[in-house]
Length: 394
Image (cartoon, rainbow, N blue to C red):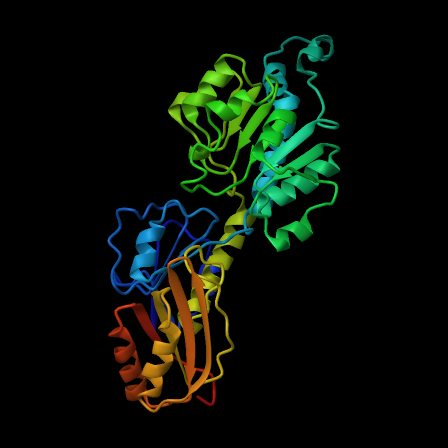
């Protein structure tokens, strides 16, 4: 029986994946897994029981990932599950930035008299705006969201340039050949009429856009931030907008300094807040967490490598360890010393840590526990789990 603790309201379409026969939800303060959306866990005291945390969303800055890694806690996210929702909001914001529809709608509501239609016709030019077609859009970050925006903006008739030094092979295949790829960020900043940011928040991307970068932009260019608030330097953007160094700023992250400033539009973090996105994220988060708890397989983790292997043995042993030489040999040697045969084995490393799956041809639970105890004595090992194969025949 696995115990799951939730923070925030998780869409039931995701939670129903945890069958009642094998899972209990919010019935223990020592859970095996945690699933959450925006709850900040930096001050949360993780019980030793926690094996994994699943974020129903792409960003994980509300989770102390480094601390989790050191404790052997796998952190999952759901990249791409909310991509369409964010893409549509960015495209809508692009359109609203050139066509003052909201202002026009509000103005019409102030009209009175029997000649409302005539008044509207006579004064509509103040809300005429411009068009996106033929304008240049720069997309910084070509992950799931950035790639979708680049493709759809091209279909709207925009000239699109994308910048991402770490673009994956899968993403590269999904991006239209008509999207120009920039070799450095300066090319995007200096040439584009609209710039939208879609990178994760890391030490390297904190204040990615600040005074120097804003100075390279056209005085009429508009910047859009639907990634994370801290990626753009707030003080620098205020100075640039107020002094007409750029044409405007739209962000999905509310901050008091940005409110009631001309040419700055602040949304209440609507990016992934559609019903469909919340369901997709909940399903993906629950699926990844459930798979890991039941089989040890890791997919879409932000702190450990992807490791998959068919579970075709009575027991599986999982090992999280420091990524140091000869660790795999030590694991195999410890298991062999107890006269247990290894049926299959896979190991992958990521930065300073590694993850190993070992399937063994052994049915005696006492022997399996003896293996786990011996492996745990290795100073390079952080966490050991044993998983019984529940399929018929084992």
